[in-house]
Length: 415
Image (cartoon, rainbow, N blue to C red):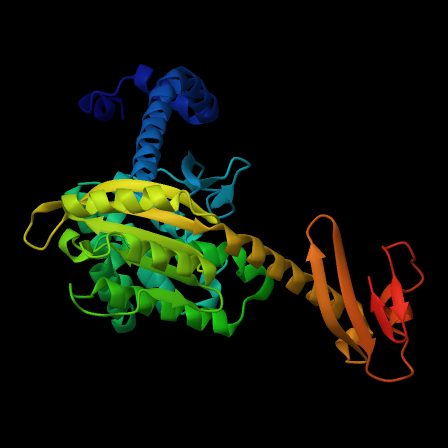
C-alpha cells in the first residue's frame, strides 16, 4: 500500500490534510468565505455599475420616445434567486418603478427582462386590461423595440428580435405594428396617440369604464393613422370629438397658401375647438417658413382666454429621401374643458354613490332629477318619488340630519 501511494506521490502528510479537510469542511468553508468577503465588494460594484448605467440609459431613451407614458422613473435592484419569484417589482413613494432582477451571465438578457417588465407596467395600467390584447401587446412591443434600437447595441437588438419580437407577434399583432410604424414614421402622430391614451387611462377608467370607451380608443387610433397617412392636398377630418377623447390637429399650411388670410384661418379654427370643448390642440409645421407661422400662431394663442400652451418643441425630422427638415410642435390645452369635465365626472361619482348606498334609488322608487356640484363647497341633489307612498326625505337623508341644508316641497328634496 505504501509503495502504491509513493508511486502516485501521495505522502502521509497529504493524507492527514485530506482527512482534516473532510471532517472540518464546514469550518474551512466559513474561514474561506471570511477571507474572500472583501473581494465580493468588486462583484457588488460591478452589479451596481450595470444597474446604474442601464437604468440611466433606459430613462434617457424613454424620455425621448414617450415621456407622456414613462412619467415614472426606472430603478433596477438586485435580488437573490430565492426571492426573485416573490417580489418582481414595486412602486416607491417618489413614483419610481423598481424592477428586481437576478444576476445572469448574459447582461443583455437582464436589460431585456427589465425593459419588458418596465414597459408592461407603465403602459396605461388601467386602460390596457379592457382593450384588445393584440392591440396592447403591439404598442408594448413597438415601444420596447424603439428603446432597444436606441441602445445601438447589435447583440441586444439580435437577442430581442430572436427571443421577444418574433415569438410574440401573431398576424393580428403584426397588422397593428405595421400601422404604428407607419404612424411613427410620419413624425409626431404616435406621440399624440400615446398622449390621448394617457389622458383616458388616468381620467376615466377607474370611475366609468365601459365598452364604449374601449371602442372609442380604437377608433381614435384609426383616426390618427388616417391623419398620419394624409397626402399634402388630401382633405381629411383633423378633429376627433368622441364622448371621452377630444383632440384636434392643426397642420400649418405653406406660407403662400396663407397669403390671403394670414394665420387668421388657423386662429379661428383653434377658437372653434376651444368652444367645442376639444381637450387638446396640436399645432405643427414643417420647414423654416412654417416654423415662423407656428410661432406667430402660438404667440396669439397665449393671449386667448381659456387656452394654455403646455409644450413647445423644435425637432429635426428625417424625410423619405433621407434629408432632415425642421419641425415645430406646440401642445395647447383647453382649460374650459378641464373644469367642465371635472365637474361632470364628480357628478357621475355622486350619482353612482347614491345608487349604491340608497336601495330606493337603486330599485327605482326614488328618481334623481338633477345634481349640481361646486367641488369642495356644496353638492345639491334634486330627487322625487315615483309613487305616492315613498318619502324621499326619509329614505335619502335618514335619521342623520345635519348633512347640509335640506329643502322640501311636496315630494321633492334638494340637498
